[in-house]
Length: 354
Image: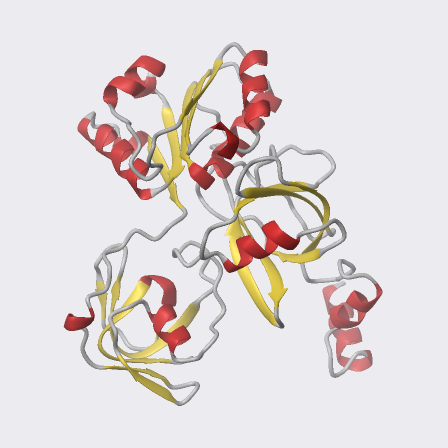
């Protein structure tokens, strides 16, 4: 079948791929591309929008906790971002649900929050990521989240509820106030319907500095040391939880998904050398920022999705030079290596094939 499609594309549809003609009939009618139509839009929580998507036949589903890349065209430019489905992984109608928080500097999140309507079509990627529940469910599970980090663990909770999970579950979420918590009524309903599920909310004054510690966890889930814990949230929460688990020698039971890049800010005074984007014939002074940021400052528009190193959309070839991984601090001086622009910064002169 694939060979037949290739033959049709080469002989009958030149100069465009067959999907470019099919999309003129219906945007989601494609043979290869994965797309989805927005069928419902809800803005029930402050600062976020929930979209129900009907993907085309290329959609293969997701595992609770994974993410997808969503692509939209804004002012003639295609942009992609990563979002985690919030629905259970066993949804029978194959639809998926995304809850998207409008971040102050978020181009795509604000666009979808403000303008998404039923009938709009978006590009979609297959589900990706290793942050998800194992096939063999643990006997005890702790789900911790803050802010927009609720989305992957909400999918986990919904999946466990749909499966009739009989183990113990603690779901603990931090946010600004009740009005900012998406799906709060459903979460409370799940806790009422499942006696083995405990759902708790905390509303600290500063979301990035939550009051979290051993005593809190011990009070809510005295069995947490024997549980598998799944954590997604802002840096302050991630650090606080990691500190507790490392102190209790439970780091191997803690599974984390970061939705922001945690890295030391660039110090322009220590940056040296030049960055050459040889594919475009552009050379600029090294500012110490990530290669993605420096490319954008130079007027380039490299493709990217998450800006935090999990989707690999911004991968490019480093021809020469040394780069530093902003997450790990590791240096890489090997030539002709594929690197992620969003999490690597140049150390001295660097040539990127972009």
